[in-house]
Image (cartoon, rainbow, N blue to C red; front, side, top):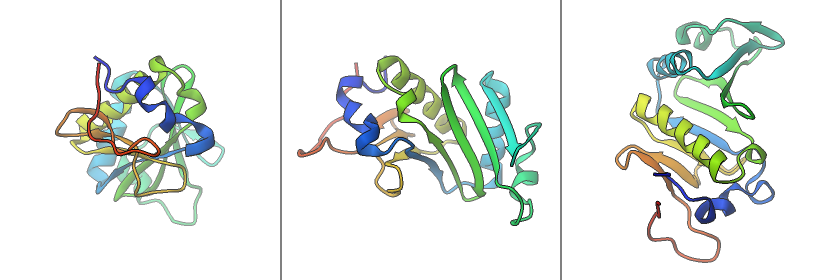
Length: 169
């Protein structure tokens, strides 16, 4: 069963409306949550590359990357759950895991399923919601992994009408 149906959410994946690089986040995290994310990346088989500036390095421990000097290069972790889809994590704050995806890579049901599976894997591992906000518009999540429902749901109403339920197949 799919978490979301493309026809029900394709308006949320229009790069011209949402911005090409929406902000995904896991709020209220700690270094322990960051470590759980890094462990998930190691265990999942997802392709990944960790870098600081132009230097590619082995995947670090969360405590090491989160305690780096603030004047250094911003660390970046690129995760590829499947070929052609990349999530870019930046280690800006221990209190929130944030990352970007490119909506141009996430068109159609198959790619939507990849994103939902990725968000759900993170949310389940951390026991926390994973929210997607329009690019540059934090605090107005559109889809997100709901811990209680144990799936990704639509959080925003379609333009011009109230939204009362989340459909699944």
